[in-house]
Image (cartoon, rainbow, N blue to C red; front, side, top):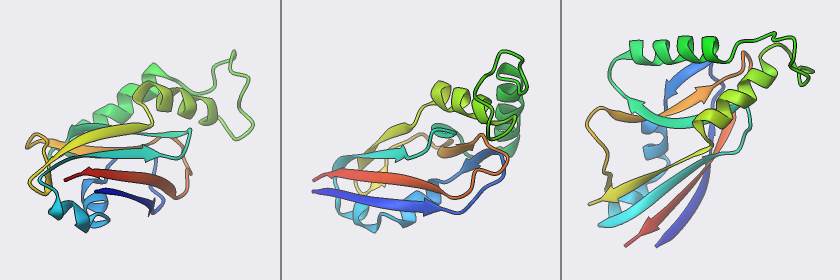
Length: 139
């Protein structure tokens, strides 16, 4: 089976947000698979996806603090800043983290660690809604 859907996420504040449940709700067909893969792509250049801690919200807070220090705003050498001080830093952060994740599917469920979840990494102060392409394959 091959299946592809687009999922529109509601706008989020800047930061790291768990979206695993939203992705799973969009794919009830996953329950039919014994083995497969789920590929998730974000169709934006100023937000990203990653897999990490799904239980303790301080991890998401600490991620935001780290990336804000690693890629600061208002650097004098930035040229791409037409959309505000968070514009180029958002693109850099998105490139560092990546635009997609691929996860194994086993017996109708994501086969990830107990503490792993999918993060939407929103790097803009006002990024707006975000679109994901969900591609599910398996048998």
